[in-house]
Amino acid sequence: MNSFIENSLKEFVQKREDIFGIRSEFVGFESSQTDAENSTKGLQSEAIFGCIRYRNENGNILSSPALVLKNPPDPTTSLVAEATILQFVNEIFIYGHILPFFANLETSVLELIPKFYGSFIQTYPQFSQAVILLENLRHSNYQNAPCKSFLNYNHLSLMVRSLGKFHAFSYLAKELDPVHFQTYALSLNPISGPIIGNHPGSLTILGTHGLTFLALQSKYKHFVPIIENLLNKADQILVTVFKKERDNPWAVIRHGDYLSGNVMFKYENGEPTHLKMFDFSSSSLSSPVLDLASLLYLNANQETRDVCFDQLIDDYCDSLSSLPIPIKKLPSRDVIITELQSKAFYAYIIASFFLPFLVAEDLGMGSFHQFLPPKYVHYDKFLELPIDVRTNVILNWGGQTCAQYLADILKDMLKRGFIQGSGLSNIG
Image (cartoon, rainbow, N blue to C red; front, side, top):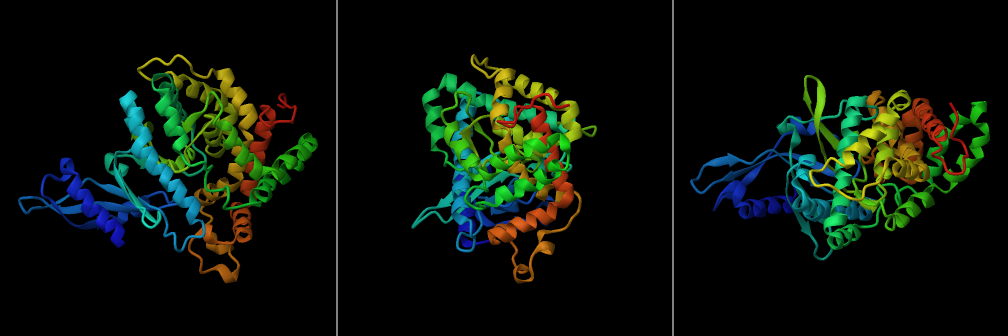
């Protein structure tokens, strides 16, 4: 543990008399290796699990509630430090300002997130270090999703319903306090996730991985040029969609990375009953379907989409009106479908990057190191690899299995008329 985090914890003990009592002193931090081994690993941040040991005013050594200390990678060693730091600033702003703002309007938003204990930032001479202190949900009987990639309907339904409720707070805020909502929403850094700026050009190559499988079927051959044209503009599509979304009347503060790895479930009799979402580092003011489409195409396989797609859309729409306070202006199901028709291809671009990671882990394909050229085998962090090496690793890691999944996504989007310019809405 570095000196910045240790000093932050000392200050935390002194400030939070509601947790530690008066005149308590920091003793140390007791790490939990078990929690660390069972946690979801992220590309853009690091996490330390454990509890604070402190001495109270009576001289007794006690332990704090179980904590997760989340901090960005060392900016002096990370090649993507600038983008990562911007994302981390966003996450601090979400926990420290936007979620409390929502909670002041209606407290049930707190049911969707872990307890936030605070954050500490080093800003002089520049932003270089930070830490976020969160509740360790595992100690409240929450568990990671059963897999990284494809979930069953019960998990997906809970996820889309929780997402709809989270998005509903934006619509509530627009009605009850539009000035503060706009101020908070526009204060988020204009980033669209860890892809833009970190992997220029690679998304076109990755997206073609699924298109190759699609082209093998005569039924879809004449749509290949349309999709190729879109993939050639992949970087531009991602940048443009977020710039335009600020003027979208249905824009919400979206989660930004709402996938199975960023939620935890509580179970009763083997079925998921409650959910907590975390990792808001890619949040932005944008269309709600950017969250929804990512979930439907990265965490549902084609069999599930064939059977449950419409029901999941209904579940999402129903949950938009689930807050105790009625909201006058909510997007209808037709509006959501229209939004998907114009923006769902975003999810394919995202899937071409992330799905290989998810599938590889679920299928036990090992770490990315096995696909590295000899000169790069000593690299421990994927995002610090050169762009061309990263791209080849992703293509090889997911392999033909992932290429088939990507082709399934394209076929599903074509069938539903979700690819602009395809003119196809009636493929069976």
